[in-house]
View (tube, rainbow, N blue to C red):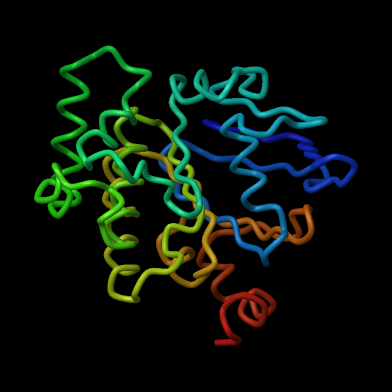
Length: 236
């Protein structure tokens, strides 16, 4: 078991956003977390990455207590978070953004190797390596955000709404690349409104409703589940 979340409670002030969820991630999996807006999906990712603190419960990564570490220590341990909205550094170049993703590493050889791999995954980024990130299209910025996360050599990549605001053809490209990243040995935890696309590449999925996990199953079973179809897949 690579990542284990047990009885996780998270509060915003007096409001509890997660009500004791349990979630497991095995090495090499793609896990999809489904749910409506406000269900607690982003909160789950933010808590795994140390940007929010649980009020109760535990997060174990390779058996170690992740919830006791600071955010930068969690990155160094092997978890990278690609936030909703991309959040690239708009006044820095593509190359500079990527290099910032490797801030926890002193291994220049590995940094160079990661950068070459990212340019293989996203050739457009190499073409635009000296261009300011703020001048990139939305799709290119999403590629850069994913690339920046990969620069830290993560064991787990957390992705929050990677298809948000992208044209359908770009969405397809991003998801194909996510499969490649997973096949290269990176475990993915994916929060995505495009439930159909997310489940098509996932191994397993969890459904969150108002801070509770109400369903978990293989991705194939969730795609075939009538309730999931009606709620998240447009009834088809």
